[in-house]
Image 1 (cartoon, rainbow, N blue to C red):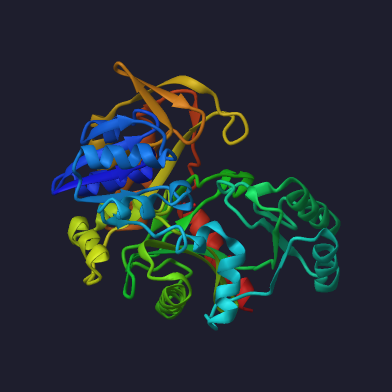
Image 2: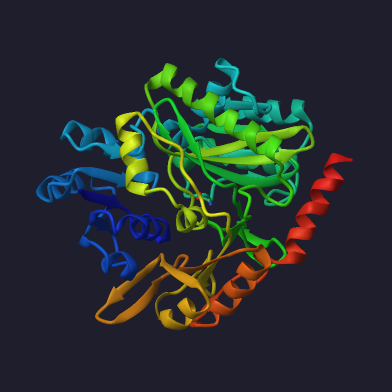
Length: 436
Ligand code: GLY
């Protein structure tokens, strides 16, 4: 079976790694990712060049395509490939609106009575947005309706000082069409612990994966600017230290009802659905959806998947997905990123990775925003590479992961606190405070 994987980063490297023993891989990536390049035939090109991707898929006679990132989904890559007779793991342009159009997502919850909804308003008029913020009177989150690569969401109390700042950011979004639309979503600010549930979806049925917690802040102790995610962990039982089975099941139910609602509204959703939830005092609430695997969260779940990923992907396409089995192992992922990231990470810096020593720690390397030229690996300014470990308990996985990071050399930094006992105790304590 020939499979095309579209995308350049660590998420796509993890997908390729999970598939390469079962399939002949073809990759379309914008830089030469050394991890993907050594296990697939590849073409360097833009993932956004839909006609170029289609031509490569047809020339390579692939049997299936897997779409890694969200931007080509927004531009209809699945619709184009399906028209050319190539089945895809990834939603159509309309179904991908669950991520690419935040107004669509919030309104879907209301119309179809999906649980886990929150107070919100969608506005294309500055005065109405300001009135909503004044009337609501509590802290809010201000989001562009469209995609902003994770950089558009601003929260009062974190990135915005007060409601006056919230109003001025809402105006900025509308006036300057941040995210591609003159439209803003204002939401209530949720208080709790965030977590991710990812699921494979065949249009009707969901196969949920272990819960993961990501760490979006750049610096230790959850300080600094928001990034694409500095690292993540998962537990042996598929839950999290602050997340019990009941709340996990409630989150999966939200996702199941969402999939039904999407089907009724715009047609079947096929691919990976990423639910980002906030565990609040009264249960999980939906923060947002992504129409793809998470990055870094894909690197937690795929290395412990025991079921064939190819078989699961075939089930997504055929509409008859079966259950997936995961090893009962804890996982820790730590991203190494260029100094200066996310504001001014330097491109073109040499990175040296001693993969043998990392493997000796039981670790794996997933390459992300790097470019291989001859035998050198160079940064391209964003997250460079991730080190992932799995073990029978979280503490062991974390300690191995931290030791493994020492075998990566370059002008890089990482968050050494991801997955540590101290940080997890802080999360548990936070949840106890919230539930009081
Ligand atoms: N972990 C954040 C994302 O994948 O968008």
